[in-house]
Amino acid sequence: NTMARRQAAASFLLLAALISASIRGEASAEDQVCKDGETGPHCSGGAGAGTVLALNPYGLEDFVGNHPAVVAVFCAASAGKCRLLAPEVQKAAESTATGARFVTVDAEEHPEARIIYGIEAYPTIRLFLNGRMAEEYEGKRLAGDLTAAADKLAEAAA
Image (cartoon, rainbow, N blue to C red):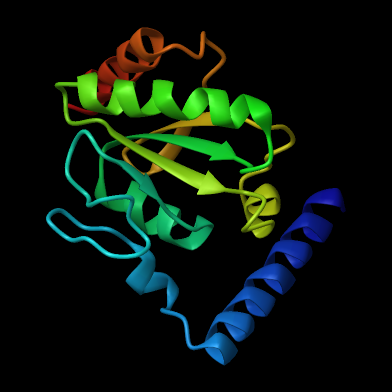
């Protein structure tokens, strides 16, 4: 019963977000996905390896479906821990040599992410392997540790 309520709430929020984006003339969810070599307002500087992409929750779903190893950081711009984590995530993205990708989702800007991905606290780091969530990362929030987790994930995807 609780799962049905969550799914109904997520569907409602998805519909509300799509209607809101349509009214504001924003790009569709498909346009929010960064593909190799693309840049745009939804990408933080491009989509190449070593870049941390900023995606909405719908773009994340497509992105993890197209990349075998993804480290997703769910944060809120107002959360101090998220501001402290951001440079560590950027360093980790720049350090990985395995092709693992790093993305962020601002769950404060996109509250539906909390329902869709079951986010209860910030920051939450999820590891996605071959299009599915493999695990919630519980390790240290330092660049070296994040890089090691991303590399291990990418090795499992190979």
